[in-house]
Image (tube, rainbow, N blue to C red; front, side, top):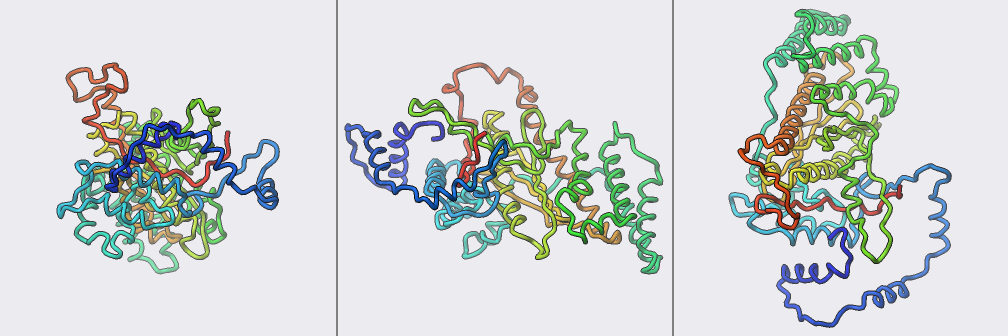
Length: 472
């Protein structure tokens, strides 16, 4: 276990693995001489070569600059280390069948995930027990049948929240204005006609009260800003001239940040993810065998949605790539971001004592934004020990205003849906601490070892990165 010395946990780990593999152990009262064993390991290790030393020295920075590690899931899917494999197997062997996700045909989802993860040499979300229902790997080679995948997809909350009538009235008015402009104008004038028509449609009834109609006010103001990008060809300029990641954030994606303002959510950019930092530093302890390790630098997502010490969502952004979907996008969307989202999920439920009822309802949102594409995803745990990841199809903001109904509008709509999911998750955490829905005080002080764990669940942790980052 993290934070405990090897000599005090080795026996328990060996016993658990042996039990899982039906191996009978012969016990002995003789104590292991750990100091002598460590000395033998050190003496057998080959000396560092001069070339390695030179290479190591060359990677150091001077002054106060920080060196950034490129290993681990932020940069690539790396070859699994022995420690990562051991962590993955230990997480699985700690599971019990009565808690696992049992499908209607008797199949345990965790068993199928473990089988695939145990056969994989490179890191995959499965090693953190994350199941992306849109990952084709799950339907290949008969891992899950079509019927099983449908059951996994539809468990819990099968659809996104429904938007209000007022919001849909604005959306439908915009779509109708685009259609009318295209039908009544020649190709040479349709661009201006679409921009002017949408502007008229969303302002004809005046403006909305930001205190009582915040979503409508945000939707209207965002559309007006996007129309300005079309009007002066700003969007075309940054997409055709190789705009930087910051160009896309400032001009486009930061518009979505404002959607969450009335929930009093902090939209943090360039900040360390607290949940991942807690996980990566969880093994720091006073062991009596060495000094306490320095805190390790953690990841900094492009966006964190933060409220009252809890992170409810994240986003990763990227710029254009000439070859379409590039490696950074694949790694961030399929590996890095899901792990950060699970870190956030685990820390959020730890704030409510891993209450089983909340674990089954809590959801963390993720916004994968690259160039002018966005794909929202949601991570939850509807059953068993599985962290399920579901996403929409990618939506794209076209440089042509005629495509507003198929790109801009769905992105604004799904942002409001993600906001509602975030609001529901915030309410779950808040109600637990305020006692809403209970008739008596449920947070009575006692020793931690005496806590009632019958209504809680401990989910497997996210697999550790290959190499720790620089100490800070």
